[in-house]
Length: 304
Image (cartoon, rainbow, N blue to C red; front, side):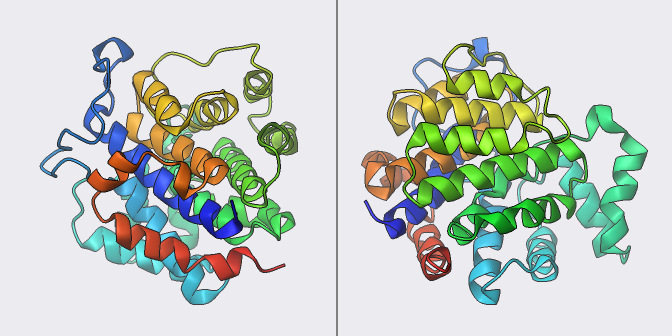
């Protein structure tokens, strides 16, 4: 398995997890079907196999990185705004509020901070930045020392809460290490250890335990960034294949599409595109376009 296969696998894995979980978004675990239909049900008014804002924003990031050959927050924000103005079927609550203010002319550098100030920390640590951050880890796979400042900058476009920045950094570091071909448990441990002293570090302790298999992550969550990252890392280090682990993550209920997307990004980086379930890929809408977006990142991922 080479770097290109892992890059494409991560991007397609993100989309598959997103599409798998989308029809069951915000259901409680007991209400999620068992077995979970694999890309066979519609999402809102969209046909089966459709992806959500998670994949749309991840594709914005992939295209921006490929076009600029670096992380350019201004370019990325313009792409997010263009997408937002296209009236997509769904936009995350906090992300939508931030982009709406910027589209109305408010200064982009202060919009996210002001909304965080208004809402307060109890409701401002959503997973709207961690859901699409994985391509940053792909692009900087061989320059992961730069993620320490780039990951928080990406999150701050919409989510300035320190816990969100911590989750984004952990996921991007994990993705980068996996794309480099590091052993799975080593990649997970290094990513989680790197963020344990940051804001939310105490809440991330369960992630480190999850890597060792001593604690299970369960129960629905309505979009908390650390739960999403935790469920994804636990899926990564469990022995199941991509299909098994994505079904398990979605079965937890809560923000099923985002939890699935982040888990899929890590699992796809681990197992590569050839390790993804072929029948699911056949049902995934825009699969070839997503593959093309990822392939355009491969040269950047190999840059040292």
